[in-house]
Length: 270
Image (cartoon, rainbow, N blue to C red; front, side):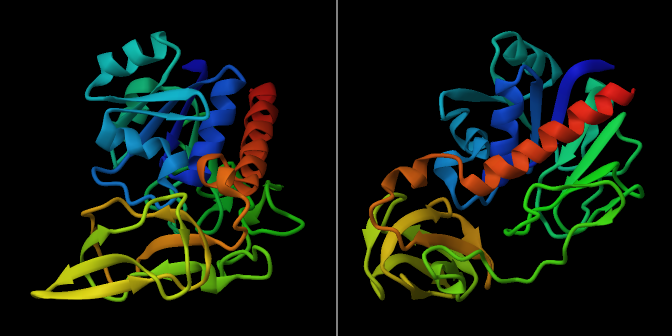
């Protein structure tokens, strides 16, 4: 077992906040991703390296690895490897100190407490002391980032966090299933009811319109197949906060702090 190696399942924006912090604090981090990640806040998601082969988030470089040797080579370069492994098969090969499930699927997709000396789950779907050692609260509010040593996180409400008085209106879901074609990009200022994308389906085309006026903080990758009701875009009503689209969020950083604290705490007990 390597006492400084952490495997993180998932490379979306919340996961990337944790990955970035662990890397900056001296841990070696390996990301396990699915074949076609569907991240929204792509400008701050290490999962983009799956498509681009290399992607940088706030000066930290992530590289796609195709096998175990490439994983070690990337770690030797002081970068972060991401490998396609939805089942977690690399965990047994790498024998890490910790496994962090940061998929945020609102349910456990296969992580168990025996995968590593330290196991941590983010948000709903896990129970501390049962399927993982610790759970980190992901619900915005007073307990965001709090370590839970027994039991689950708060249940998912299905309501996005409030930004400048706006909650569910700022998040856009796919009205139909099909292939999305983006006409606006992350960081663009969009107006309410402006078309930001089209979805091709059954020889028809459906418009996707901005639900509010603001900055397009996230939009799913162009030409992705999207299912009906899948989250595909996120608008920030704060028009003067352009940099927020390209930096790790306050929520992600807070959760990352909880993960770091949990790993250091449990490592000290082992």
